[in-house]
Amino acid sequence: MRPNFFHHLHPPTIPAEQARWRHTLGAGGTAVFLVLVLLVTGILEMFYYVPNPQEAALSVQRITYHVPYGWLIRNLHYWAAQLLLIFASLHLLRVVFTAAYGPPRRFNYLLGMGLFVLAFLLDFTGYILRWDVEVCWPLVTGTNLLKTIPLIGDFLFRLAVGGENACESALLRFYTWHIFALTLPVVILGVWHAFRVRRDGGIAVPPPALRPNPERISRFELVRREVQAMLIVGAALVVLSVLFPAPIAPAMIGQPVLTEEARAPWFFLWVQQLLKWGDPFVFGVLIPFAILLALILIPYIFPPPAPQDVGRWFPPSNRLAQVVITLIAVFILVLTLVNR
Image (cartoon, rainbow, N blue to C red; front, top):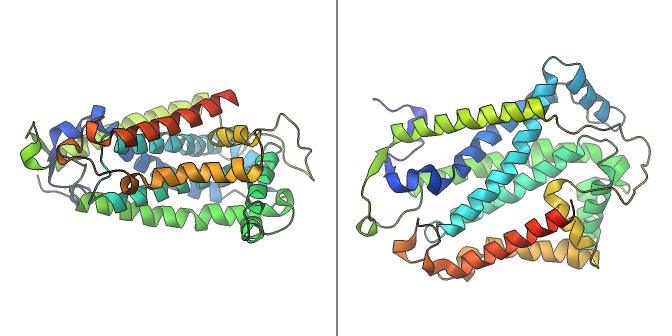
């Protein structure tokens, strides 16, 4: 069979052991597929969404209730965004637990971390674009945290919001962030990340002499498996979209009253719980930043994994990195569940 463009995006062959679903979890490929779904559905939503405070929530309601199949497009966009965060997190855990971050893949790990952060920022800015009564508290709290940063806090706040009152002036700024300032870097870093994976020979594996199983599969078989995975994920996405509609609430009019029941989006509930413990800068900025920095520096602050351990689940040579990322994951998960 003659390879086409999509086949050429993959190495000619890859080790069969590391190509199995139980090894990769399908997380990286699924994340790419979900980004494509988000791009297509987001473009379709742009035809009807109106980014001004008076009409934004009403345009979301129009998409949901009046545009033919608008409800399905919006629900697909919403669920693809939520699943992207889950699969991106699984991909990060898989990379660390299989010691797939050592040289020469350290720089690509940084590119992946950049995409990881951008995915959360995109989800948050997209959440704000609903512009209904549920978004004011997360918007005010999140942007006010910027003000607590010494020296540059006020500048970052103005850059993010564009005015003094976030619930009155931030919509167009967040629309610009969501559509251009965050989406464009995701596309650039995503292509760069995929290129680096391809240049490094695909998924991380031990050197040939240290591989217990020499069996390999062709790029044709790999693409076939990826298409199967996309069909399964696409079907699950449609089922979620039909059975569980994306949240929708009354339009935000004037200055909403912030109540104790106000909640952050699910992926930032752990930060909301931290804010209950004390100083906003320490618990809302410093601790989350320290956690992010620890994740970013994993390939640099821990010894590189042994060559024979690369591509193996839970190898002994990177045990400390496994412990650190496990503690971080459990910490965030527990705080999220406590604050539900």
